[in-house]
Image 1 (cartoon, rainbow, N blue to C red):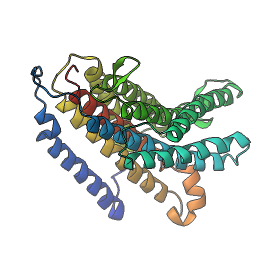
Image 2: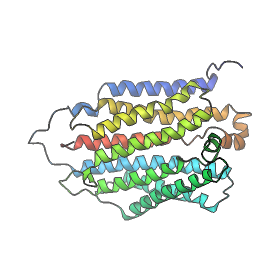
Image 3: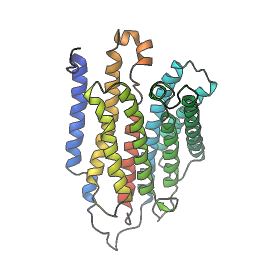
Image 4: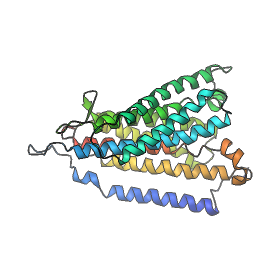
Length: 325
């Protein structure tokens, strides 16, 4: 078998462009940015009270994160469930709920109101519940197959981690409404804890779960392309850094965490390009789109990493705006 020598022609240019964008992101991040204005020193007693505008801005960023996850699930589940011929009518549910979550997330992203929205709240709660129920359906699908949790069933059965992506979209969206609804003069909190720390921990855990799902499918593909190692190496490092920032000491320097989260967000977008190239390399390429789109690498899946990285960046913003964190 000929050794893989990397993509050529248009594919090579596409990968070169994504690599250049990633390098530019790294360079910009290492020069500082927003973190440079937040040195790792205790706040002064004269520090002004928390600004409601900052809480609203962080909430809008969380809406954007929830919307990115919802968009990824919407298109990915549509393709996967179409391939399954919608054998179970419940397979329409994640498409409808993720579309609703995407719509309310877009509304929240542009909404500058400092109050929670009842319709967005309801949609986000519904989305979270659908994620939990969907996980149960997928586990049941695998359990019903001969051998249960064997590699064959994990590779080709219903993906166990996929429904949790829409669940995370709902959870992050619900958090965004709680942050937005912060009373004037107070810092955003969730379950009595600083909101930035809670969201950071949840985003880090979500990255680990998404990495496990990507790792399983890339293992099925034998990691035939060296770039396939990126989704199982970069997000765990970002999750570790974000978890450390969420559980670590207050007022620490988090520039490296921010840098790595930005790189992970870029990687998620780049992954879509890689998967599109993978579809184009199948027999007859895009001319046989009906078959290759169903059987090739899932093009809408990688932006799930982008959505979680955006949530992590919003969490860092909340930590930096909180004088006690």
